[in-house]
Length: 299
Image (cartoon, rainbow, N blue to C red; front, side):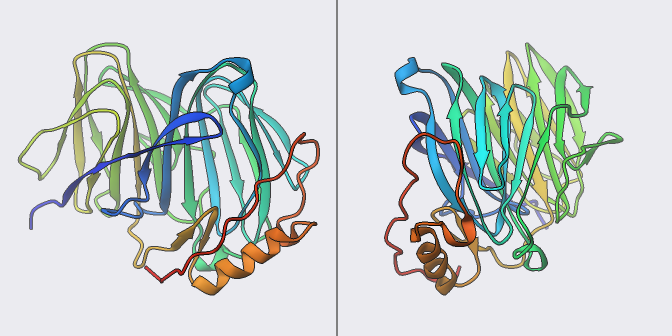
């Protein structure tokens, strides 16, 4: 059986004043492992009056995973957390049954990846938590400098926890590089290019795929390794995980299973006290209002 490969084109948008490219979810693919949302924000330089500013908004049924490349962002949440996220660091906010938070840029220059991880059924109603990781394992592979964001690679293990088997790696090269990365054949993977251009040769796939920013290359289960080559400075994220049997239902900032859940959560956030999502203290400005809930269908 041939290896399943897909090329996914990102959607272009804007979040809090920052240009973004959204690779997941898409019509072609809604999820890779438990990674159910993947935004590449920036790189962008904005004047002080237009800095990224995202007012309080709710989440449930997921973990938000923020990987900072350039700039600084201030995170506040309804647990009382207040944390500045700096380059080379990760913020992991596990919403569980519900949390709300705000994000404010403290710098004119911003470049980051914002990812969501769907929680399995057994963890969807857990108590919310927030964790900050200032240091992550580093490695050098064939001219690429790697940062292990989550999971295991090349004998290293990230301190960032996950509730399902996951992999997240940031790979950056300042010039020509050629590396072969061993993969878990039981995982599905995605190569999400952030800068430059990469040639990818997954084992078991006859063609060499060229990836540019705005493209995510999906590699189905059964792939034991991938060769990555670049001729100039480039950066990409390698995301992977065990395939989900049924993609979760995503709407607005919620990850659930049933359309009725979305209506209940929207009504909770519409309450003055935020219901299950609570209140973010210290943010100067209005919270984001819940939009009308559309007619949703299970995926």
